[in-house]
Image (cartoon, rainbow, N blue to C red):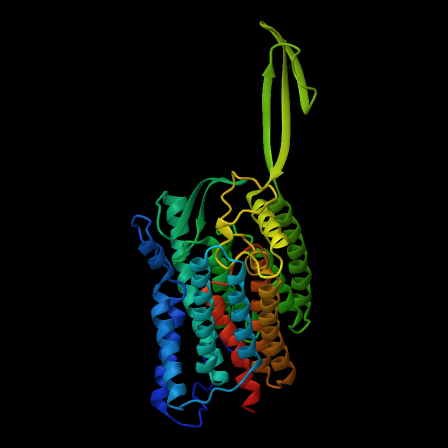
Length: 460
């Protein structure tokens, strides 16, 4: 029986047989996984210190401990560090980010970003090193699933409190004038960001769906309940992340046995994916303005829009009704990124400096253009073609590792693992088109899991 709830063999195949090493390694991984969704915003006056405090979060304590632990094991030769295309891709990626110093006008901000990416790369490397076999891979995914259920349950409580009782909580974000929806609460869980929550719950949703058919009847009922929990919470995030999730599901369902129900689900999810892609592309490009109307008491009106004439005690009146569209803030963000890239195509304007650089071409100055809201365009603007190409290389290496692992694997259990992680990576890649995700800690944790697949098929 393959299940997200337990592993048939949870023992390590580590040749050293060091039980204390195994326990400490997994304890650190467990603390990292449990802390990844916990984010704290300090309610103090905005200063350099509070900015740094907001960057350093609880997960960094355990992430740093894991990095140090792996470093000590390497120095004491308790583990051997093998070369891998993943390691080479990480090194090149960081070199690409570092090269953006050449075009940077604020070397301090760029240096902070360089250190940030180096730290996240070391974290992904530590995860890859700590996950030494297939049991460890399932351990990581299984506990991500468990923590996701807890976070989603907390978010659901926040949704109920806000909509049913009108109680504000840290689990939701209140918007008084959200585009097209007006006054709403967006589920954010412990992230303080609705889009973060959507992405974080994606692996749990995919895992529950993947193992529906192979679970016992009572477990299947639990999985269905968890799936609905995830879907309800993710709906109330009102996030564009649904586009990436739907395409990830298309891939996931395409790899399942083609039963009648699976074929129907494939067509349904494919239709939803296409619809959501077109819908969010349109509302990300244009925002509807209006309907607006103006009453004229005489003939001095413009012949535009819909005009209605009527007579009352004051005489002839005309009502002009007009509906228009304007560029959205998201479009302005991406337009600025494109302009900066065209003006600094090789090394960009410097990592971390997007907010403080203005292109020579005109942009809407009323929009607070602080981030590009797009990972590809952000890297093109800040690190130029050099950084962007090396970013694509890093993602390509991860997909290649998963593809090779699935093709060389003959165990049904591990084939499902590769399919699951590939679907998650596809979703994250598509979500990154409309979101800056390369500083999300759980994204780099996923990178470490992907890279660990090398351990699976090279140990055999």
